[in-house]
Length: 201
Image 1 (cartoon, helix red, strand yellow):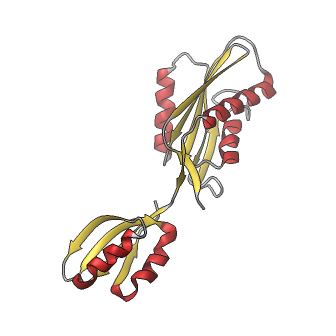
Image 2 (cartoon, rainbow, N blue to C red):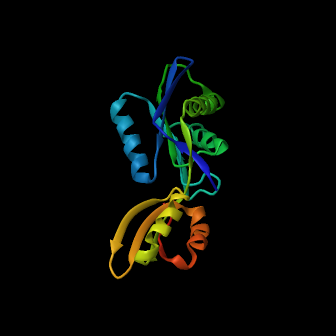
Image 3 (cartoon, rainbow, N blue to C red):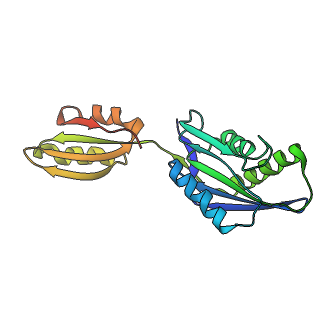
């Protein structure tokens, strides 16, 4: 299923009862990237009271990995509302991190939930989104006589030729939309052989 992800990092800030909420959105593919951004913000704002986040890695409708961190706020009042916004908007491969500076006025559980949710929503409103299309890498074996036909067919699928090996035959390593692999294989037919397929990216 196609879903949306972030094209560029973005930021939004809110002030609620003298507390400052700084929201940041980043595209991520794995937990290492997630923690890199969290640690970077902890270092950038060392005197902040809390650094909370919610993230989704993969398809938000059928996620492989999602989670959140309240970073000392009352359980369920910070990270979960951030994650809920991402899930509701159908945004994957993304983390929203909210840095909070306490302003001296307690917001209460309901107030905190609304504040973190509103900050996450403000970040999402500022996002430049694009459709995420899962990709596959395949290898197509053909002979020299049919190489140009295979290349011409690939052009119609917006495929990227990553590598070409010339031996007894021609082997093209190609990246294209996962959903197009079967149709491409049928179009090439007996002019080429889809030898192998890697896990989608």
